[in-house]
Image: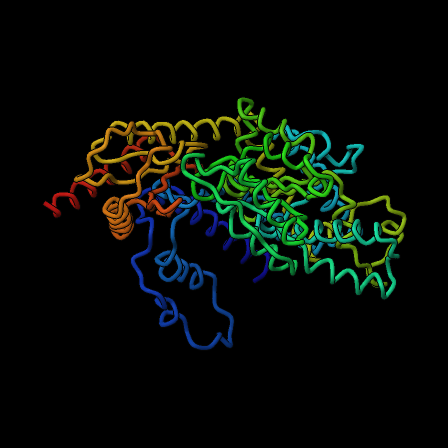
Length: 515
């Protein structure tokens, strides 16, 4: 493909992308295909001769689009959103044009310096404490990771290395000696990472990657599925009794199941009760809900992170109008990362890095090569402005409040199970035979009910099978629930009302069949 062919193809692709966004509200959200649909449509062997772009683009329409789940549809209300916007797409185009692995400053100075600047912008936009900026006295700063899962795995490894080093130096061992290395693996075998049973599975996977143990803190509906201080203390004391050493704690700001917020202040108070607990690395997993901090009314939450928190992560690619991947990780002290992850062979050495005057982001993550992801974040922030980003967050939270109100208005059919938050409503279908005086929304009195569980699961599956909207179900504290959230860029009130009408009609249909 030469420059003229590229120009023609690019214009055609851009037109197709715009038409896709214009038409996505009318498309079936879930594809009507079966597993393995694509293989018979694609030749068994790659072509020997070049094909023209028109053929390739036609195959996108006829073979790829029919197999897509349309995450950008305003009728997509499952999981959490995965936003994309035109400025973000333009950022990806330039990033591909300037392709550089960017593992150190010298690879492409603009890649590194833009990431540092943009991450400081994001820290300010989210009202994070100053300690998380690159200019702070604590030597903090931010780095863009692939996902929150990558961020947690990276942080857990850094936490492991920091705690092991502290313990071995206390024993008088010297780094780099055989005795240090042997003792390191003895100590590591007793390390424990901790999170609640509502923390994303990446917490347990991170501990697995780090080669350490994992323990979960149980949560209850009566506590809105939030991690509490007494429950954490039980786990910490059990670890002490068993001769284990807790070294990492994941606190969640917006759990995957219900968008619950762990009780930061009381948990940090517990960690002050023993010197060993004070050395636990505290990470805030705010993969989805952290985006809300861009709005002034939620920024009081960030004040909890000024002391007693080592790292914070949120995914801009969920709710902040930047496409995947754009997971922003902030640390209080970058040396905790670089001390754990800096391996510098001769072929990576250069005068700028050796003098320590530049940042080499390869030492802030597990991967060596990195994409120029800061560019799309820069484009989005400049194109929308902070006021535009705040407006998006407020609008979609408002849509969540609207949906929760609609659910409460049909208390004959539904009951809200956990407190609605950050645009997410968690509810279930009522057992029509159950007699209850429970007020909708009072989550501490939700009764377990197998009939209600069965109805909720059946209705969720039937709604998704029909494909007009896409929602998800889950189980919390033994209760089957439906989750509905609408947070992408095309979300509007009319789609929320339509989704509720679909759920009501489907529920009434299923209940009628039971009579």
